[in-house]
Every structure is written in structure tokens, then in C-alpha cells.
Image 1 (cartoon, rainbow, N blue to C red):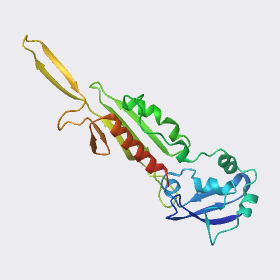
Image 2: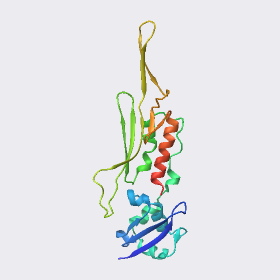
Image 3: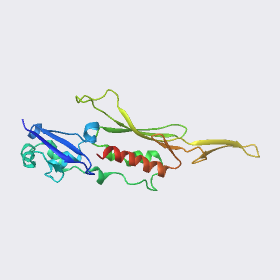
Length: 212
């Protein structure tokens, strides 16, 4: 059984990650010490780059990239690497005018969670409130998953209502988008007055989670 070890630079060139390959062909297995793989078992850019023959991020001492080419022939990992799109190229752009609700954000980020151990849950209630939570399956050092998933980020909307009677005695109930000391949006506990600012903060959280 083949075994290869590479030391590679992170995207910002401030950290060194270890990428391991074991086996060969259809039985080839890869692992990486970056957060994307270590915490969520994502197929990361470091593994994909090496499988695609890119040695620009390799730091010595490391095995030769030519050895990996031999071991990866006819492997499923190699096929996955060929179609891999770095998160930087598919991450969501800032919230646009077309996004009016948290449900719109839920649909907007849907493609980001394919083939990952992250998933999301959307909930809305009769009072108009909305909740979108991102979960991740974490693993112990022995490779076994934690029993319960971990909430890693959320965005919520809780409308503020007030009611009154006018001079004719007619009852009115109004929804306030943003009132003093009553900000309806929140991202991981931080309050926001409007969806635009809350949405941008939430997407930045997702970006930080998925970019090692």
C-alpha cells in the first residue's frame, strides 16, 4: 500500500498543512490537517491541487508529486479533483436587491453545501420570524463523528410589532422594520437593523468557515 506525505502552504501562506495519501487506484484515500478537512471532512483545495499535479504550494520536505500521479491513476479522488471548484470562485456575493428575506438567502447559499458535511435548516413561524442555521458534523481524533451536530452560525429575523387605537377607536397593528433599540436581525448574537448588513455578515461567516 502506498503512502505519501506533503507539506503545503495555506491560501494566505501563513500556515503549513500536512496532506496524506494512502493506498492507490480505487482505494486511494486522502486527508489534510487544514480546518476544512479536519473539522468537517471537506474535500479541500490542498488535496485537489496535489491530485491535479500542482506543486506550487509544496514545502520541503515532501514526497515527489510524480509519485502521487502513479498512485492516483483510476481513482475516484482524481476524478473529483478534476471537477473541483475552489470556494473562492463559488462563494456568494454580497446580498443583492433581489434578496428580500432570509428564505431568499437560504436558496442563495444552497449550492455551497453540496458534497460537504455542513448543512442548513430554515424555519419560519406564524409571527413572521425566520431562522436559518448552519450545522456541521464534527469528528473525534479517532475519526468517529460526534453524536450531535454542532451549530456553527445562524441568521434570524424577529419582527417588532406595535399596536394602537386611532382617534376613531379603530385598532391597528404595525410591523416596524427597524426601531430604536429594536433591531430585528441577528447573526450569531450580533444585532442588525437591516437584512443587507445582516446578510453580508452571515455570508462572511460562511466564507470564513469554508475557506481554510
